[in-house]
Length: 392
Image (cartoon, rainbow, N blue to C red; front, top):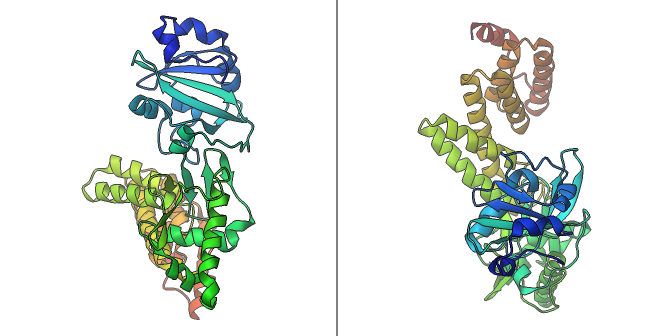
């Protein structure tokens, strides 16, 4: 980047506060507590935000920890403060105050003075996928995989998509996601995807892995090592260092929320359970509905989502936040359409809120679904629910 502020500038005794205004590139200077201390006109034009407010932090402007952002799992200032660098140039989508989404490349470095982090920005159009092959960039690269719902992939260069996700390389990736945390033997992949291939099967596996790596890391040299799909003796494994998977964070946060709920810490429980609920975008690997190898994890994660939504609904109901509780119960009822207790809880709360027409429509849907599936009416009656709802 031309015209930057760096540690050499600070070491030379030049006041960066005077320098930043003259730079063509956007610059933010943040304190270690993330508060924005200084910025220049280029940053203001790019971000389109009210940077002047005293309470503005970098996360407000760059989308740190915002669901779906490249920076979802960390703050750019905190990362640079702890490691002296973001690990390379990262592309983010900045949401301006007017709602417009603007692509930007950012780097962050802790200043030699030690009391601030300098963040440099330059414009990058959405979908900009220019290659970054420098060693410092590769060392900081991460692949983000959303496996809850339909499979979605993203690196610092932007989203990765295409029909290949539904072909063998994509299916192999999903299998490795399902078996993350262990080495998957070549013979295992052969048995799952090429059971009748005979002698040519091993070559099919290797070709699928090669194609997969090319899709995930287009800048990788033909036979260079892969950051994301690691070769192990006799098999392959998803990198735990360079790959983030939403299902892992979902389980971690959900576990913390359930533990807090069990010990009676309602505030901590709600924060964690709400985060977990936002991560649950649908069934695990929903775009592989008939893959028997995904069923075990799909059912386990769905059961965890059910616990989360029940817990959130109970917390909100106890707090008197009935409309929010209705939202959680609606989601639970759709997730588990044959869970009569979930349907009872939702119908009762709808009646309590005076939403009788909606309760009647939902009851009719539940009754028809149940009769189609089991040949009889469910053990569920609006007449029984109405008095109970009125008592509450």
